[in-house]
Image 1 (cartoon, helix red, strand yellow):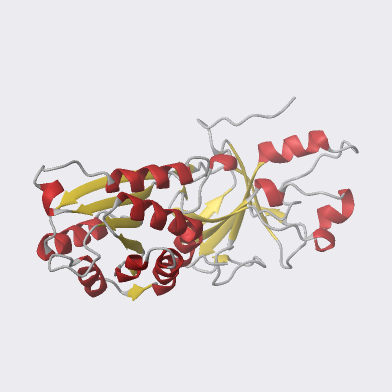
Image 2 (cartoon, rainbow, N blue to C red):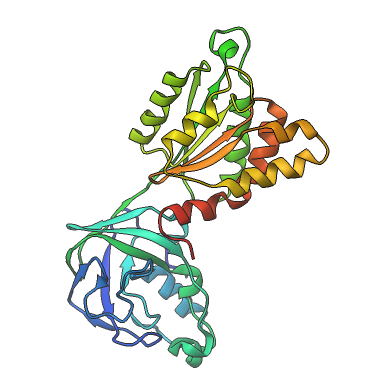
Length: 317
């Protein structure tokens, strides 16, 4: 009978440490975590995979599938924290876990199997950790002990769309470009682990208003900001200039590629001054105003979007 998760009661079953990578970890009643990870563990360091986590339910279910009817103990899959009550198949990167004062941020889902470099794989020819385990990094230091309760904190991926149009903002016609971006991005994330949350703003082609919206987006902790409109060379086209001044870094490759790709058939596409940039940890993509261009640009941007999110959070790997 398959073991199920009881999300109303999430706690630590076992705390496990090893002094050498690729070996079975042994239990501890209490561990200390700092900015490097778990004190005394082989995986501690300034990287994204400091603390590994695995559900006891997945270990139990794996044991049921083993032909030798072997019962696997906590730590044998090289996980640091063996837990009950949390279904890691629902967890997304950047979600967090709070254990007392300690806070952990999810940085990776699963991993590549080590094969002959893994003690369990050598013994039984398979391992549950690559598919069911997750990795985290320490956000808040402290000590945790066996039996401690775990709070799972879902982190929404906040996506904002700003449409710049004098006429649409005045009510002369309905904005279609902003909704087109939302539809494409929503569809992209529909079957993913991410938790997208959308915000929307419609403003005139006004430099000061756009500056205020960009700062507001930063204050709202927006992860991905799309603007549409104002990327041409007309007297009211101010979007790229404002975004460039506001941002920390530019990402020229994606927009250059899109201009060249569509410019082969439509030379006027090369006139677009679309821009991609970063401000702190917020990604900014400024697209043209037409619905057709928005669909073309967004379709290309989403191909690298998740990797770009990881990179901006220091998780590019």
